[in-house]
Length: 149
Image (cartoon, rainbow, N blue to C red; front, top):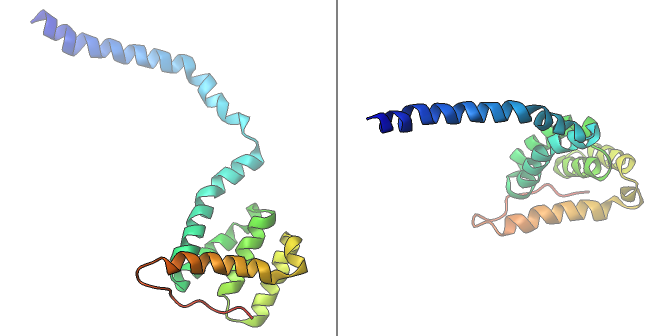
């Protein structure tokens, strides 16, 4: 009887107290470790899941869903720099049916990434090829994609 009381009563309580004591002793070093990440790197890490979802939607979703996800990506443009910003703008231009809107988006992509300035067609073809290559592997076939001008 005494052994079962110790094994099922006192033993778990002692384990709980020991774990809380160790947790309190190491808490300052654990919570202080997050300050080692710079603010820019922290913002980049926060945007990683959204970029992953956007890439998956771009490659596998129908045009309506890809457009919706790209519109949410446009909301985070302020926090994105360089080639990533250019990629988002080019994807949105590929989904836009208005030629003037496409040209404006390509111009903004040029400002974000100077490599796109020389000729935006290779960058647009790379993004389009990502979408087509992924969707040709789907069993249901390829949904329609808006052609670029």
